[in-house]
Image 1 (cartoon, rainbow, N blue to C red):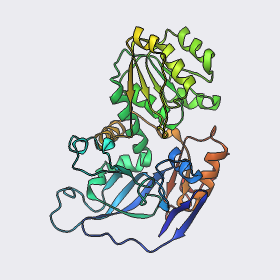
Image 2 (cartoon, helix red, strand yellow):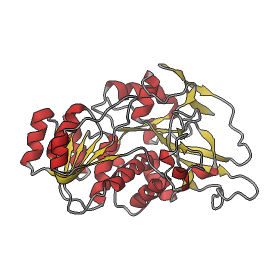
Image 3 (cartoon, one colour):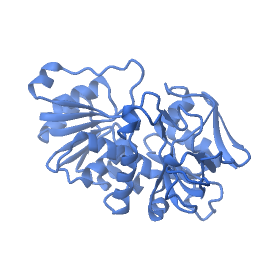
Image 4 (spheres, rainbow, N blue to C red):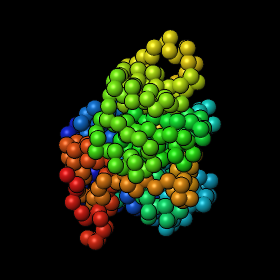
Length: 358
């Protein structure tokens, strides 16, 4: 089978290896599609603080069950060969208070497949614990593939924000996660939905996904642009710089919520003007990854047709063309949002055989 192994910064190979043999208690899965995340690009560059090398890259995937463990296993109950699952990539202890309460993302020992755990999903076949398999309708798997995972991120963010149907929302940083968050927020029936990004090329897809307005302005110009629209009740900040934090605090109406989205680097600090924070009684909401329940919520949104993230896919490629995909993402971030990888058996008539947009 084919897999992507990263041995160190800027050192990867698409290699042929024997098919894996599941250990007792493991599920064998066949990849349907996998998504390339910004954290994957950072790991390849040596810029991901949690990276552990060597590593089979990838943590966003939908797969089909090949085999399930024999004998009684409560975690495997209900899993059947042939059905589709989205892989929950968080590996946690299962016994701490956070895990017992379903908050695996807050486990002190948590690892993430393909990042801090060496066994990722950029591989044609993979083995996982039954508890990492979240069954999804086959139609969702075939139609949306690995887009379930970023929609789970969005579901977590929107859930944490306590968003209401009358709330006006701004998303600062309209990349994959920012736009997916807008989709999830729109499904909640929010009021005005504003998109902000440094790439003007992202405006058409933002409007197609239901955003009401878009700007590529920054700093004071961005603060004025939001103020002209009456401010907002919730800001999702996927950039998390001193500038975007300042703009967000200025833009929020009294009682507003500032939702911090971007992954934190070691030693990162969140600095806010306390006088504005105090005067407007603002709330800061931290968000980290997702829970299993967020995957179920995302799959439900997709199955019911409440969101359609397919416009976010900018390329479909075979797994063996991983290098092309990473080059495109690194060199043309203005042209790409989500690149999906597919196993090698995808036929030539599939969009997976097409060129990388440039």
